Image (cartoon, rainbow, N blue to C red; front, side, top):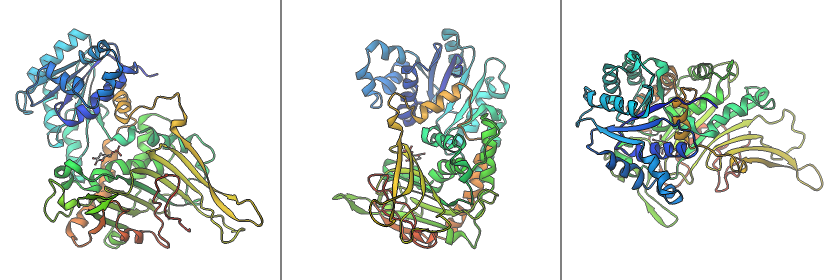
Length: 505
Ligand code: BG6
């Protein structure tokens, strides 16, 4: 167990949705599971004018996200948690100076004996990250900090393009050193995403096969059954590529593709991830259209219920050209992956919610048993039904040699006694302990943008290539063209071990 120092967590944008929906429930679980240090407090701040009591009511007592916990525990247990939460408003503006905030931090520091250790969590629009970092630096935190330690956690989106991501990195790094900056990507907090490292580097049966000699292609699907809901305004300026692909999916790609790190130190792991991301061959004029598909969901009826099309959603501009579906094929130019296609797709309004990584192995060199199905796949189910599934051929009982795929299936829920932390819980605890392994480093973010940026530019200028797909379907058929030969996307059925499509290699 790593040590968790005494500390204060200051949340910027604390009156917003993320605080009540994710951050406070995550901190509550850490409290419940005994992971918080005895000396710990949370200070919420934003432009809104709230008292400590109003803040506690909003994020604890009246929160839909803690309802069950409140019902399940004694009032004194809940009160003890709520009494560690405080609020200080910024006088209606983030402009600063943060003198009032600083005095409140100092007084909490004295009251709780927190040794001047502070984490600042920025859950505000990214355009003010640099401003906040500067104001904090003026108050003696970050590079200028003399007492205790200070860390800065920043939420996504981290930049809007390569250029803006670079500017943001440079801006924040003026005031905080890179090791003090924690760029959050909640996919890295998922157990199953971390398990990619363990599957690959703690099993002698997989790593020898994890290369171009044995792997035919890699497929990564992130499907959500919901549409943009009330987030149309934000999403319309973002789109699937920025919202999911540049960050969450590129992180998964880097873990699937990286070389073994020299040890388990954060920097060793992140060094290898960056190398993998930098080795991705960028698309160019010749490959943009054969290797990418974008789409938008159209109105449709799902289980008798009418579902709006993307352009009808609230906050979405008329005639919007923002993609809700993106599928990209690419190659990684290094010794391990030369010639192995990666197919990665993400979308809203799909038939089901699923995120999975499918390693499709090459068929046996000499097919002894002709005309039979044996398609070796290793499927890492990131969510839901978290687990790992191996598909391999077995003899169908009876005469002759008919082969069929069988499943070796592991579910995380089978580990009954293990408490699986929710992503934000794990990530917050890591930052509290100063472990940045599961946070994105500046060069990782930039390498991911360097691949995605030209695609966005191309899509911006060539408006005609937008494919509609009825909500509740597996996306535009055009995406099938990405995969040579037969339609090869694995579209998991309701029982996620099965798929609607079979791929003949
Ligand atoms: C967020 C995106 O980062 O991830 C959302 O902004 C998306 O659009 C969400 O719905 C998906 O997260 P998860 O953990 O439910 O897969």
